[in-house]
Length: 384
View 1 (cartoon, rainbow, N blue to C red):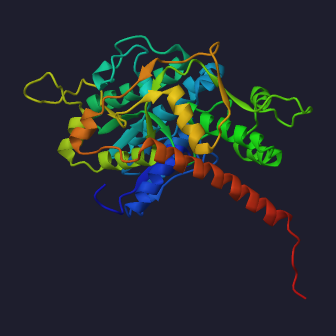
View 2 (tube, rainbow, N blue to C red; view 1 turned 90 degrees about the vertical axis):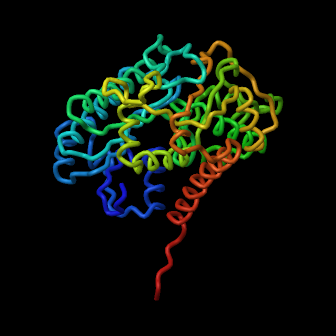
View 3 (tube, rainbow, N blue to C red; view 1 turned 120 degrees about the vertical axis):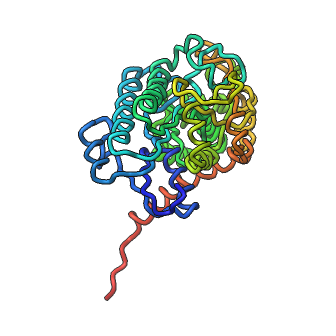
């Protein structure tokens, strides 16, 4: 993407990852960017996707569109997670090949690695053990996307690369407590509990209008509109034991990494696409290897420690309980990012700073909704 006027397509531009890529492209001075909302272009419909590519003919494709969610969502909607992700990536990757896109970057997830994968997880650990059952359909869909990139590179000589980021968070994250990932769920639960401590039920209702309904179990924990004076103090109830280790990457760091990869010289990009064989003394790349590269920050912490960090940033000092009847998920997920760091990239945003920025974005969205409602409800002034 050395030319600022190269046509670039960002699939999933309204999501957390896609919007971060748009911000990075804008900062980089790229002017010829195309994207479509889901209403304008349904990526699960092959004919619509192929028609779009025929008309726009993008040279570079960032495939960030996906159906994502936490343990609860994956457990409740396994068929949707499987179908939607398989359909989106199949249609976009195939259309990019047919229209001769120069490069494509497919965004996956660290959940593609096995439940008991050696730590930190290297790219070559893919398909070396059973997957975590709580998100297996999603993981299998993403693995299929990596395999599709590999197959097209092998058969057609395309330059399609799959980037596997660790757990992401940041602006435009998804805070619906029925489907969200762990970090946004922690932010919202602690925020609601803090509001409950202050008995600010109007703010709790505003939060629900912006970030989605509050499940009954959360209302019970925070004592939503308590009917009696002896209602217990608000507390936060979290899933599992808090013992799993997780690594988190600020989404704008990921976006910078994506542009970094797409801007690599051809020789370096091809070594990523065709996965340099570390065991080969010649350093030759193999067209049979997975075109896979990990993106992370090289640090992790337990969910219990993470919860304390979020509580401190949000300002909640009450009780936290753990529901050990709920699943923990994979015991540990830490990515080996030596390939990325070897190319010259590393994450810059510290976890605490990133959570503060994510929480600020969370609050700004509520404030923006409040301001908009005030405008709608204010008396109209007419000139005489």
